[in-house]
View 1 (spheres, rainbow, N blue to C red):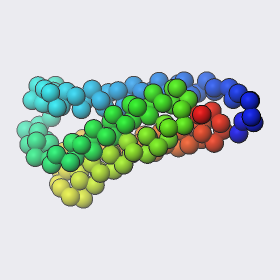
View 2 (cartoon, rainbow, N blue to C red):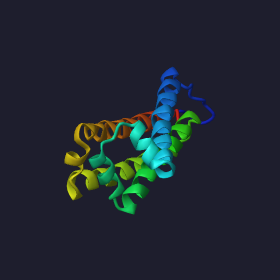
View 3 (cartoon, rainbow, N blue to C red):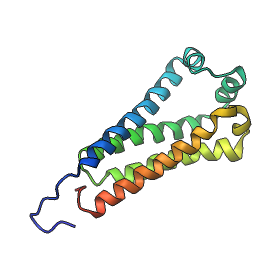
Length: 147
């Protein structure tokens, strides 16, 4: 922790993690935007099958809201991390909760694993990334890097 009036230096890895986090979540935001505005064209570019497209189109609106919270929250968290703001941590937690809601739908409330075929493990990778972002922001907060 830093004392009064003492400035904590920004470690080099904050910039590396922050930029990678912003790129990671930036792609999520781009994917969300393309899905909401050019769904059929985007799904074709992503190589989704007809069954995957049908599954996705049948998802309830709340899952799209959870997805938006996840990706846009992750991008905001990355920006806050790069700005060294302590608000990065709670924003990353909210982002994770958005991912979690979508994962509950995919894995417990629907046949998402079957419908998405070989694409479903990516959900686990995304969840692990969310946990890493939370942990990293928490550690940087504990060390006094975030203010």
